Amino acid sequence: MKPFFFAPLLLGLCIAPAAGAIEGTALEIAFKDRNERPGRVLIQDGRARGESERSRYSYVLADLTMPSLVFVDLGERTRTDASRVLFNGQPERYRLESRGTAEAVAGRPTREYAVYDDNGQLCSRLFVWSEPLEPELEALRGWLGRIRVDPKAVLPALGRLADGLLSPCARAEMDAMAELSRHGLLIKRINADDITAFTVTEVRTVAHLENCRMEAPARFENLPPPELVKRMLYRALFGGRPEPDPRLLERCP
Image (cartoon, rainbow, N blue to C red; front, side, top):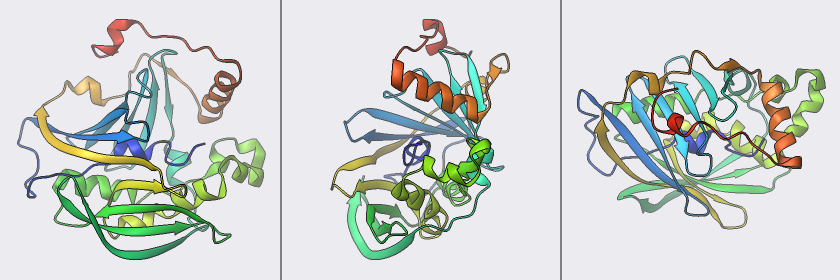
């Protein structure tokens, strides 16, 4: 599992004073990855949807009050509840260091933190947006603050060996999320090679989405996390990926 496999899809900040989205609208948070590919997070009625150009045939859905997260694959017509993987473990393998006030991102000042793995290796520099936060962004911060990654839930048969699914830095960054969220909302990450892995660029109010876009497709197959990982590994080794019906990209499944 790559570091921040889900989190970059669910991060955001606002360039206007705290007010919250207008009733009957959603909050759209735009970001870009290390290759300048765009993505967005939509927050509406306590739920969030994350999607990006990098993974245009899949998206994630989160209930910010539960917390929960579901991975939806339009090509294979599957849905995977990853809640147990993200919220069932114990944070233990990191050190978080405050580096003080940093440069503004999308018009707001940030605070910088450095994350080290349990071997003392610098993993990344993380920038948070403190306050004031809009209610929607405060809910997102609370959701991120409840992350307790549990690698064993990905492939239970591996037991403690499942820890090897995450690199030391990937584990450190995920484990640090709860503490980091107490200081603010993560909005930018620079890795140990000084490459900006993602950054939030804008937040804006958009029209209310159809409710079905914020819900996991009921008719899709329920795919357990272990099976999802196996399929991802298979595609990484041998290629090939079912493409969705183009209509699924324009309307609710």
